Amino acid sequence: MDLAVEFTRIVPASGSLTVCRQQFWLGTHRAGLTVTLRADAGTVELLAAGVRIKKVPSRLTPQHLRQLIAEGGTRIQPTTTPAHPGAGAAVEVERTVNASGLVSLGGRQYPVGSPFAGRRLTVRLEGAVLHLSDGRTLLRALPNPLTGEATARLRDARPAGPAPQPATEPVQVQRRVSSRGWIAVAGQRIGVGIGHAAATVTVEAADATFRITRAGQVIAEVARTTTKPIARFKVRKPQR
Image 1: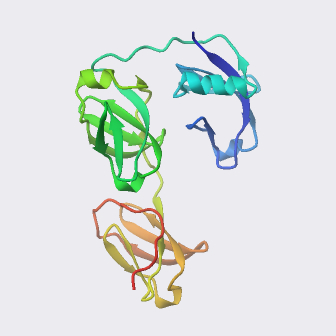
Image 2: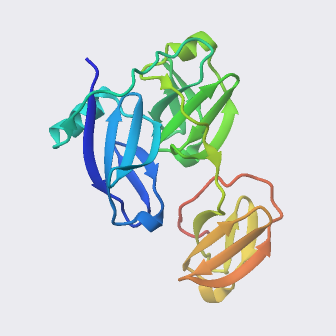
Image 3: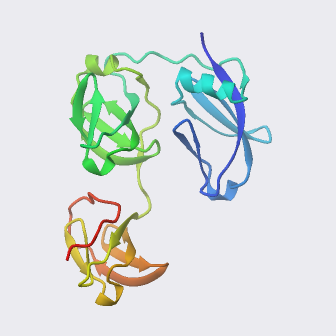
């Protein structure tokens, strides 16, 4: 039986509203606003004061919809009937990356990267390409290891929505400064000074530069000389 639910949520300060692991970007200017969501297995419509803000493909499963109804949402008539993805069609699935950086697809494990270990991500399979995203931002593009028929048979697969887009803002990572005043990002060593030893700093990684800040203050900005991808985002104990 088709399910659909209407419920309300308050937009958080970040401007990114999350419902059952699906994220909806509404902007920081809408922080504190109460929005109404009308969701089924095909689409999610977001409205404010009766005016539609956006309508996006749904990543909510029947289990999610039943959960939202049980939590006080109002059951409504579905607006769409989700198409069953066929061979050759772009599809998406939600998967949790295991501790070894692998995801399960079609009964087999495939590597997507250890930096994503433990994260619940969206896997989009289209033709020869696998896109890994957080639901909105493209994190990595890899060769698709599945055939078209195997892709169509994937558990919990749904017709793919719009393709994820690369991040438009610099990637931010954290590092703990070594006892000698150094950090390393994407294989590039950067000196920030022994006065910052053992401190945790934030690194904004743009195409051409690394900007290092501590407590909101810029302490160094250097040219980026490495083309390696960033493989670690969190701090760890400094090497001595």
